[in-house]
Length: 81
Image (cartoon, rainbow, N blue to C red):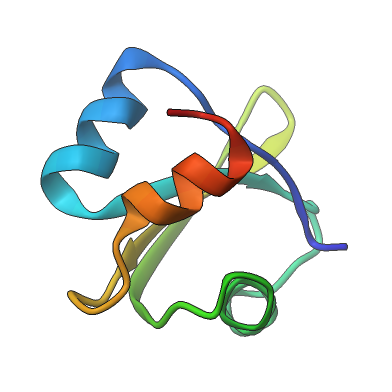
């Protein structure tokens, strides 16, 4: 499992609602292609773009979904919203 846990904060909730983005903590050695494939397979959503960065020794992936794949649906499945 590459996607370890969703990030939940007020800023992330705003990003989910306004920008159709969702944020996950991922495995430190995961490549963008692997993250994209797992998210698309697990949640049946299409990824438009992705940024990754490392904070506090954790790798964070900010994933923007295509218009036909609302991030709010993923957030609801995960119990964020």
